[in-house]
Amino acid sequence: MVIAYIDRSNLSVAITLPEFRSHFQIADQERGSLLAAFFWSYALLQIPAGWIIDRFGVKKPFAIGFLVWSATSACTAFATSLQQLYFLRILLGVAEAVAPTASMRWIRFNYPDQQRGFATGIWMLGTKIGPAVGPPVAAALTAAFGWRQMFFFLGLGLLVWIIPWLRYGSDTSLPARDEAVDSSEPPFSKVLFSPTVAGVFIGTFCYMYFVYFCVTWLPSYLVEQRNLSLASMGFYSFFAFGGMAAATVAGGWTADRMIKRGADSIRVRKLFTMAGLLIASTEVIGALTDSTSVALFAAVFSLTGLGLAGANKWALTQSAIPPASVGRVLGIQNCAANVAGIAAPLFTGWLKHATGSYSAPLFAVWAFLLIGCAAFWVLVRPLDGCAPQKLLAE
Image 1 (tube, rainbow, N blue to C red):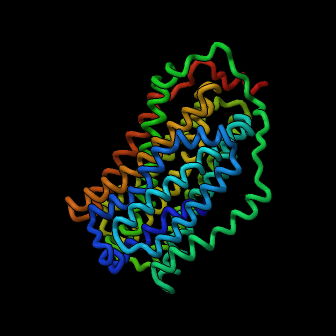
Image 2 (cartoon, one colour):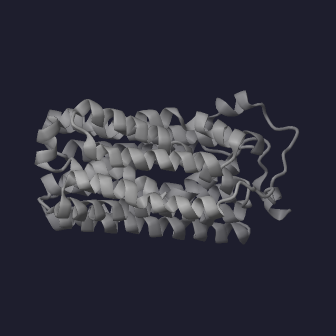
Image 3 (cartoon, rainbow, N blue to C red):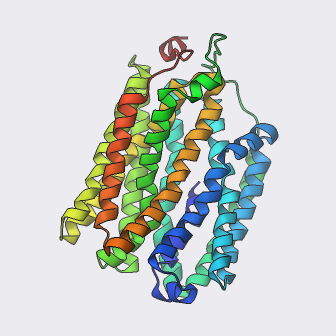
């Protein structure tokens, strides 16, 4: 996941360069649509990717997807037109679609309820380390060799991961120790149209809107609005996403400990999720202050705080949804997460073009985070057939 996020975020560094934008004749609105191109294919293929993983296992589809997305990232070095850039970003989304479904399926069927928060936190650590190390590494390679070489080196150099994966990766999944499917579970149609699934969908979209704003536009915001150099931008991006990674693991582990001691799993995970969204809403301070130091603190603090929700929002779904329906709902949840990857760069680009600053995009982030908090609070409830405390006791 570290490599996946490096390869999807390297364009966000290249696009800060005036010579890159000039070469491909990229305006603000086109910048937003180009950054969103990856997520069109990535979001649409989440559910089909889940079917492929169920049908063919984890090992080979993951290896093929990794090979294709690495080659695609490297081929960006040879792009000569804006149309080619769009095509490569769409292909990158196709290839990376397999990664989250394979990972979440593995966790769901190998860890009981009181361990899923930490296990998911470890997985999500990769999704935060990638955006943390990606910008500074890409910026350093770009400064030293140029943007074309940056894409080429990262795309081919990180292919080394495929060697240990093919050697040590396994398709074997142990039966989940808490997996007890109740014959009285509601039909999937009832689950699908429940308030809980609606709350998970809305809340996840709002959570990921902020994440993908940071993945796609934070480098440009720091360079253009706060006048940071590429090196300084990479430094602050590293600490923002690094703090989020640490909070993700800590939040998942702490929630697990509370649940293991007898606390209600859904209540605990909802509280952690809502707390993360509320802390993240402090990002709006960047739109209210002229102080670069205060704005940078808000950027790091808000993204770090969001980490409390990271693992817990996924584990919350696994606890609130009956076992027979959880796989499909997780696919829907991840689809919602990546629809935000389309919306965030597009809406941000439109707002910046319309207003000429980043204030309106930051206020939009704030509004979405509050909506997401309300959705988890009001709508998400355990559905019939879950019985999380009974399963924990067993």
